[in-house]
Amino acid sequence: MRMILSLVLILSACASPSPQFFGATRYDTTLDGIRFVVFHDGARAQVIRLGYLDRQTRARIPELMVVAAEQTTGCRVIPNSLRSRIPGDTGEAQLSLRCPDG
Image (cartoon, one colour):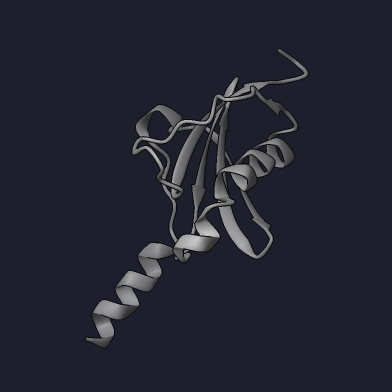
């Protein structure tokens, strides 16, 4: 049982990008005590939230994902571009960016 719990804890601390973000620049950041990994590739980013959150706390995650993407990449998130693979999922999102150099 201990081994399974250890494995779950180790895997929950890992974040791998979707295949379309392989080779993207990785950033790790913490906002309001919540850890995020941002993968930046040109005019797009993928943000992954790490760790468990209760339902009430998850409500503010999309806003924090936008902040995480902007702070780490130096780009602006295009309004209303945040999309997740599962509607309402706060564990992963992809965003379109407007970057100063492009």
